[in-house]
Image (cartoon, rainbow, N blue to C red; front, top):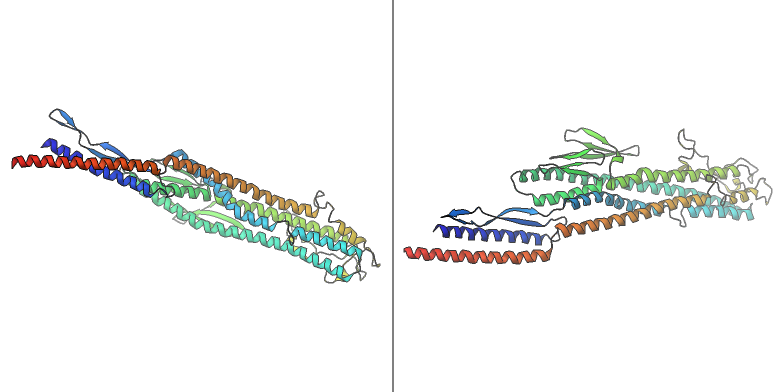
Length: 467
């Protein structure tokens, strides 16, 4: 009977094992479209053989382990490249908004500069005309308003970036805590000799998301815990402990810090982050202030050059020394003399007879109007650019930034697609392969069932002999 019991055990273990590998295959098929899922594979190992009367007889088969297919290099590459993709993707919308603000279109600064000097040109034909004088003042007011509108739009883009950064913090903190929780689960499960396949897949996805947001770096220890830190070296997750990311905006400065569970805060330099945070902060703290400075310089040059000519003229009341634009503010050193000029730009005249079209009050004197109209083509900005040329450079700068970011975004998206395809090819689910495995394991299950039935019949036969 010992031999039949051995055969019975081999048949039953084979039946149970093939049922288990069919379940593993079915789970793979079920998750064929699950993002980040890694194909699982059952490792079959034989039971230790026993010696019966000098003959070694096998005891059947068992599932030694269920492992997930994994390519550490591809996983690392996806995490690293996610930072570049996150940075370019985050910059796309604010750059598109800046392109709208600095577009060369009617109603924008460029168009209003042209309209303003066209009005002065019209005034040269009839320097005493009330209508022409009204139009010059109106065009000056609209030009100043176009500068104010551009500054308002820039502040709106900045506020949108602030809102985006603040909203992303909650998601980042949630992901950090989930990574810490998964560290505990994975290390606990794997300390018993089992594998935490599903939890590892989930953690890999979270690490890729964190890399896209912050450009984090990660390192796994021998117990299966992942250490997560910022590119600057600031730890964020250590084993089961996650730090909390907090933000503040103080005097228009974006402040970032991490806080431990004990309430201890550590400042984090915004230049030590990567990913989406880096992209948004570069636009907020570098590009937008640079554009504001260029607008200030443009407004300052316009106002000072035009006032210098207008103040030498005589209005219809015989007054001289009148400024067309209000005097520019004088910021304290070391600030540039033009700081705040775009916001301060406004027409100082309140009536058309205050406008000085000529050097004298004589009828038909248009010398000042001619000189001011000539400013439209004069290289008065740094001695190298006209007013419209300088604005075109600002517009071109924004367009270049946006164009380069589109190229970077497309390139990073293609890279991520390639890496994901390579990962899916290496460790993802192949339905064709799983169907072949399913048929193979089904045949094994059926054969095991047949084997078990035959052994059962043999045992019945032996028992009937005893009866």
